[in-house]
Image (tube, rainbow, N blue to C red; front, side, top):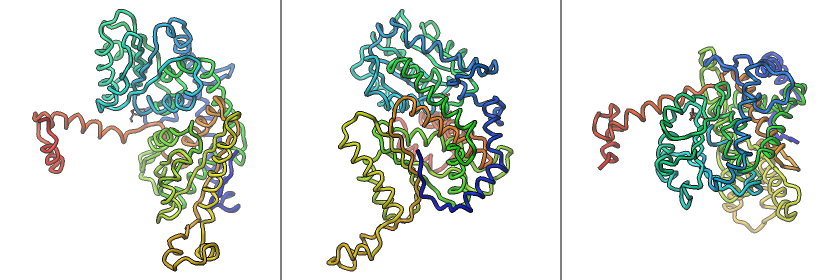
Length: 472
Ligand code: F6P
């Protein structure tokens, strides 16, 4: 269910729906599901939907994508896997980390197998140290997830993991990648299992793939298939619902309206669900790495802003932190509430969660005027009364689910995937590439040789910082 308090009257909504027809969002969805090359700069289709498809007829490429998860599911189900390993360490970063981490965190309270699944992403050595703390290398499976098999952080952590495991004869390393050749070269003589991550599945759209092998092991393939089924249901919805009833399309139009027309510079995601506490971080990559661009897919500079800053956190936790800013700060921040309720949990706590979510949305919208403050607290000084005013006028969307489970989780994530793609179409960008992350990586490699003193920094400020930080 969704309800919105947005600055969008009927006339504006009609104009937006007409715009959706002009841009032909329905055709954009058809192109996606026909496997057309919607990722124009890399000349690829975007087949993340195929991973969860239950269609009887698929193109050979889409069928190959769907079949790619079966070896991982079989490995997860193999009694040998569960017998040999007590700890699984997932090593990956970005789209090779956020999705599986979110998925596991959402359901780790109800795992099928007593597997201790840990995640390691950063090149900061502490991340790896933390991941192996207390683990027995003889009973640990290391899963390296990297679509390119060229990401520095992941290769660094995998190298340390390989050394930590020691030269075992049994395979204790699984590698999930689109680049099996590089993976084999890395493995050398070490026994490893390699699982395919299809080239046509974008990293930030890949949690449905073998990238989630660790989660498949911990949650069990049955639970994982329920998540796929939920996503498939959303795929059916986005392909069949009329624009006015099509949730991904409506949310994409709202994103376009708030960013391109109303020039909102941020959107705060308030996940009123402990199980979805990592969702705001996941959405940061999904939406900002997809649509954080100023040049169109055809190379033209865009005339309007695209995706705003996506930030947020867990509710009600945030009420004891940045909600002060939301209610009395100077900047506008449209909010997105996601209230995911579980059946059969302690009713008093869940009732409080609902009340807080509803209250925050209402106060963000209606505020608290000076007159209300003075009527409710007549003895306040003028100064204090003024400081108690809540500005109000903050738009919000309220998504709620009264029976949060594996299927509704899958539907929710697929909803955001389609929303992100369709918003990219409306803004005129390619949501499936990420050229903006390349320069930083290249520069970091150059600066490593500066830090060892082999070369000089070109930038004077960097040079000064290097002097302070150089290996002593
Ligand atoms: O952030 C850049 C990026 O390429 C992401 O798009 C990707 O999810 C992440 O790095 C990890 O890439 P890989 O899976 O190839 O290691």
